[in-house]
Image 1 (cartoon, rainbow, N blue to C red):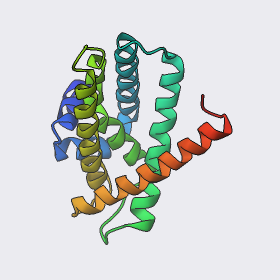
Image 2 (tube, rainbow, N blue to C red; image 1 turned 90 degrees about the vertical axis):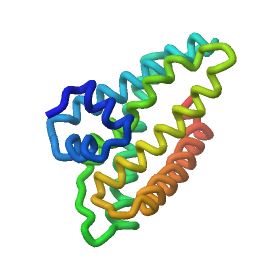
Image 3 (cartoon, rainbow, N blue to C red; image 1 turned 45 degrees about the horizontal axis):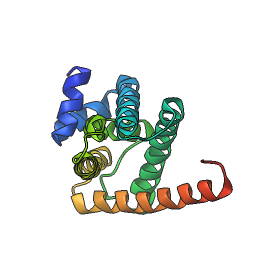
Image 4 (cartoon, rainbow, N blue to C red; image 1 turned 60 degrees about the vertical axis):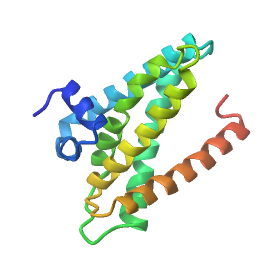
Length: 173
């Protein structure tokens, strides 16, 4: 079994074996939560250095909620709407692989660098999308990367709609 750091690096390197390992390791859910929280903290630090004003506690809470919601969404979409014949997964497997897929987000700590912040944010965001697609492909036992991308796109659209509804209802500031 790889260490927490090696798993984060493996996920960031798009190593399918790393995603298979965390998918199979039911004890890695806490580690996946750790990745989500570290990325949330890195984003908060980067935002503050870029002049943003946000609450670390709210950002951390929101990151955890988003992680659970995203895992549930991708699970339902991937196993009910777009399954392949060999698809087999549970929400815990989705949470672990998706948590580690956020590993490149640790670099968001650098978004406060003047002149480079937006570029760093853009590159890291695309990198995280790609790791998410690999994570979903592995967790759902897909042969098709395009199908995993489809799951991520559908989940993203639903997430955006839910976020907009939450904002308009006043549930999210």
